[in-house]
Image (cartoon, rainbow, N blue to C red; front, side, top):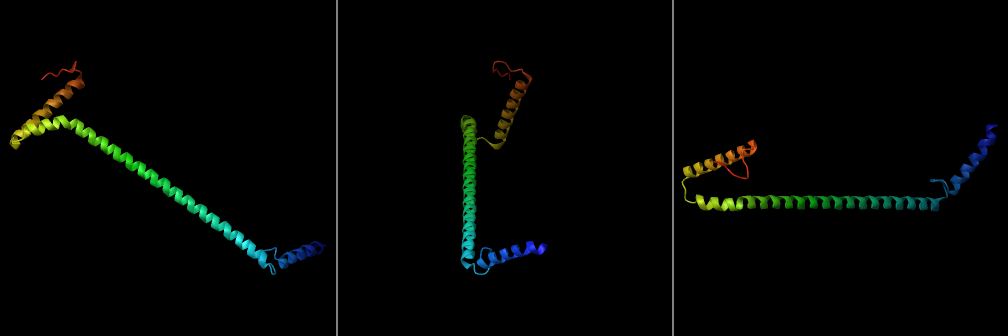
Length: 136
């Protein structure tokens, strides 16, 4: 009973194999070459897509890095500008006023300026300062 079903299936598989419709079958060299070429083209397309994706990712990464560098440069320039603005007038006064003073006098002057600044800071924190007046 099973032989009635198996024989036609076996014969059909043998005919497919001989005609080359099954990969690796005898007599189907042209069919196999076509299949090989198709899979080769697919693999090449996959490689090209992967390469394009990698290149795109690299470009995006480079753009991000460049944007980060530009941002850091801008921040650095802003910091330098703030320093020059804050220290500009004070620094010029300090340099012109301190020129030629002995180091002990310079240290005493710096200590006095620090104490004065701390006193103003404490008055501001306590709320003792009113109308931007400084009580010495």
